[in-house]
Image 1 (spheres, helix red, strand yellow):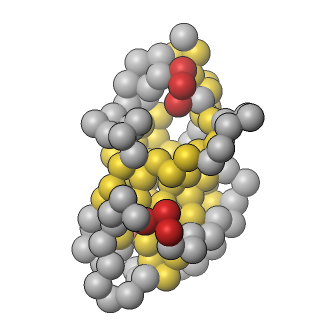
Image 2: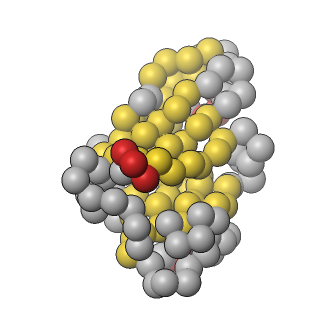
Length: 128
C-alpha cells in the first residue's frame, strides 16, 4: 500500500477538518497506519495511530479528545477527524504505514516502528 493524503485547508480556531489517507488500489489490511505532522522549524510529531488488526488507536496528548482516526475499508481510506482545532495544530500532516504482525496493537511505542510515508502531506492551517 502506498497511500497519499488529502483534505487539508484553512480553518478558523474551533473548526473541524477531515483528512484522508487513501490508496486507490490496495487495502490497509495487515498494516499499521500513523498520522504525523510537522510545522516549520519544529520537529515531527506523531499524532495518532490505527491498527488494521484490532482497530486499536492511540493519540498524542496534544490531540487526545479532539482527533479521531477511523477506517473505511470499502474505500481503502483511513481518516483523521480533527475537531476543536487550535492554531498550534497548524502543520503539514502526512500518513505513514508499516506492515504489522497478525497481533499488533497501537500504543505509545508505535513511533518505534518503521512507518513509511509516500505522499507529500496535506497542509492544515488554523487561524486564530
